[in-house]
Image 1 (cartoon, one colour):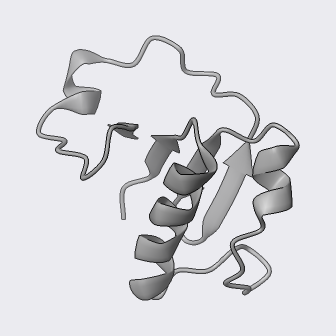
Image 2 (cartoon, rainbow, N blue to C red):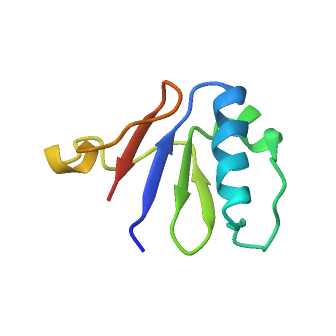
Length: 83
C-alpha cells in the first residue's frame, strides 16, 4: 500500500480526512478511531496513512516530485501527496 500524506489547515479538514479513513477501516497506531482534535490543536497539520494513521507537526519532504501530486483530486481544498 502506498503511503498517503494529507496537509490540513483547519479542524474541519482534520475531521473530514479522519472520518473517511475510519470509514475505510483504518485506525491510529494504537488501534483507536478517535478524532483526537487535541492533537490538531497542539499543532499537528499532517496526517499519514500507511499500515495505520499517524500525524506530524511538519512534513520533511518539502519538495515532492512532480509525480507525487499527479492524478490527485481532493474532495475539499487540502493538499494530498502520494509517496
